[in-house]
Length: 439
Image (cartoon, rainbow, N blue to C red; front, top):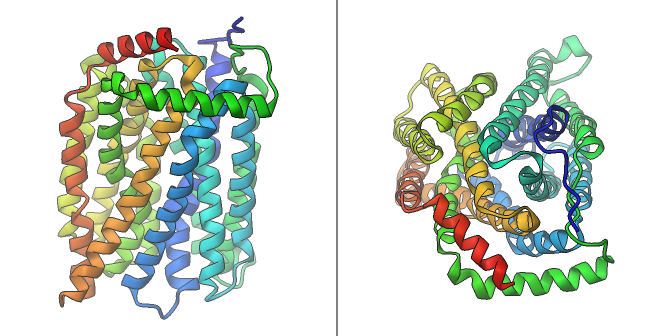
């Protein structure tokens, strides 16, 4: 017996998209913006920039390992027990708690900062699995690109608004009664926790999770989820198109995620001002708001895959350019270029995948989707940090080693686009239908 959600209603779509508005505050203010600066200049003061870069990269990688190991299983359990929203709430509270705890970190306590940061990343990443898995329940297939890109556009706007306020607070701490910029940064972490929790409420109030089976106990859902996951693993060879897409996604989203997490750190390492880098990131947010919506229309006009290819081509140009970056002005231009395509690539990848999977397996499938996405958190930052360290050991100066490290991302975009070329969306949907009949 299936209880359908209210698909394609304005309230349902906006309530779902508001979670992007909510959690993008963490992605922008903490993960991409202030934490790399806070970590390098406050809790790792006096440490060689290559060493602090490697620590940050490995911390992202370790948090990613936790999600990689748990995402598919948690997704299968959530599908079996119809507990997507409950798991979303659990990881949401975990992320909010650890993000707020960053306020407690004092100077040079880099171990404590890393611990809280990894906990917040795990909460953010885990919640996204179950948020994404609700997408097939929110809208019909023909509107999936629009709804997904609307979510990302909300994320850019919401995250950008809070980030703008926090940047103002950090650049002018005395005006807000703070003794230093570092105190303002720590308070900004608290504002992220409050914002994230507050604007998540519409999703929990107005997005109904479909019930495909009668409610089961948590223990029963765990047993059935493990069994389902084992069955999927045995049958995965029959889902060739899904596998090809996930490999392609893993490769290119590796590059996207690494740039998000490491761009500010890279700019500092080659000598750019942290204030200019933060302002450039803010520009990316407000460019990304209309650009994400524009990508939804572009996908409808030229096809979802072609739109993703366009975004990846821009990323290739940006990566090569970034390796030879010389001035703050160039960084600003690069920030605009990234803002034009970042949300579009992520949103259209999400909607392309959502159209190939059934709603009753969405959490398990998005568990694999996010698992591959988190492999990028493991591999990408570690790749940049490892290549930079290797270059330094070979005798290159720190700034040159950092440039060599960031250039390694180019391979990921090219390889991901090459694999994506072989994805046939219609064939993938038929393979999944046949798989469901065998279950």
